[in-house]
Length: 565
Image 1 (cartoon, rainbow, N blue to C red):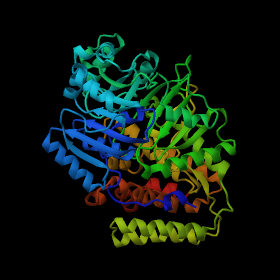
Image 2: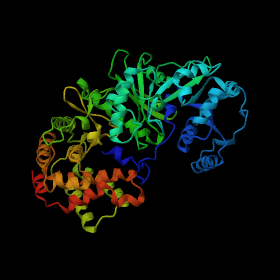
Image 3: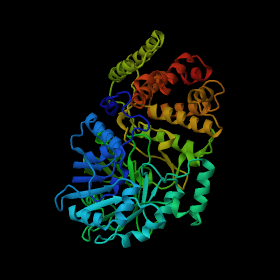
Image 4: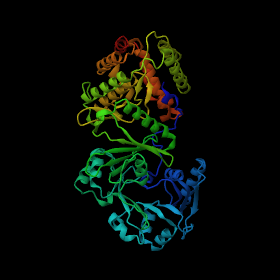
């Protein structure tokens, strides 16, 4: 029971917003298991640390003393003994044919690459036959069409349209693939170069009419020797992994999305059959091996649900291949095509897409409810473990602590059976896709609990839906929104009460345990939020304060009605 949660170590600050690994362009490489990597110029430190994970040796050749010192200090701090910082000189200090990857780290270096025949010859000397260069051409004189003419003795380059215009690359599509680029624009999978909303709309307008200046376009380029074998197919490591499950990706178009402010979020490849404008598969990769267990859990959960017949008729993604490359977990799934819930919702209590999502969660609970999986006492013992871990991070008033202890005791002493259910574990609106037929489908099952707690998914979804309703009306403070939607004006309270009653009736959940399940749900969410908060910010966490609010307002009319079903 709750094995996924209990196996997780919740350490403050380990998944902070903005603390994301770099060198997203490295996912474009045919292979991310390399020996010798060379950087001409000083890349961002996050990029160097990523290269140190995928290369046996990383040599940074830079004339920038300050940047070199910073890279050296970061490498020592993170224990990356395979990073060497060298002073740049004319000749490359490497033997012939030993370099797997050469990164041109800045615009000046790229300009020199195109203009300096001696540098090109030196790079050809040190590259392996399969070795590659990655750079980003800038300026009118080095546009993508000119690149092959300016590089003597190299093969045909692989070119990418990438976004945003500056900073870490977050999306990439083969440059000539107009159909995939249109898909990325249609579903906002790209990262806009112009951040202000009116300017973003102007950028979209110009793009659609091919009026967007070439000066604003960012191009990535992979190039190697004549035998490097670059082409428009998906990266070789993906194709090889898929082939192990008899999935042929050789003819698929593709695009990469690596947008995220959190290291836990996955890198996505969208794979299209040649004649289709909708993806056939979506491939997920972790950014850091520390998060492999989450993606492995998603694979396991989807296969269990598939075995139970719950993925029929496109109700869930289906796993088509799974494996690891460069120590990172990779899973290929069938794509669920449609529109993100937040773009489709009517943001009202009678939204049909919210109702569809609620109905699906109720069906999931009813279909998977297992009254024999655990006794109420065993359930309470597991919740006690969570409670103890929760109190290691958060300071509760003695009365609040006593209240939660009483809620767990109510479960322990229940004469009625409390069934366990298959729990999604992260059932927020951001993980819901609305198909063209109006059916809501839940994605991203990495937090799934095959023996999870009933009602928790439902409570969490309705809370996240309330946030969407409020933000449509221009309200941003999450705690105030919860108070308004569920305690004060309570516009969504009838939906919460009706859905809870239906869930209990269909899944066999004793109604006298609704209150303990409600409060322990927010305790669980607060514990999961720990990694996204620094130690100094723990007491400002949303869910711990939501829990405090719910305890404080436990006699509010809405809660009295909910807990007396």
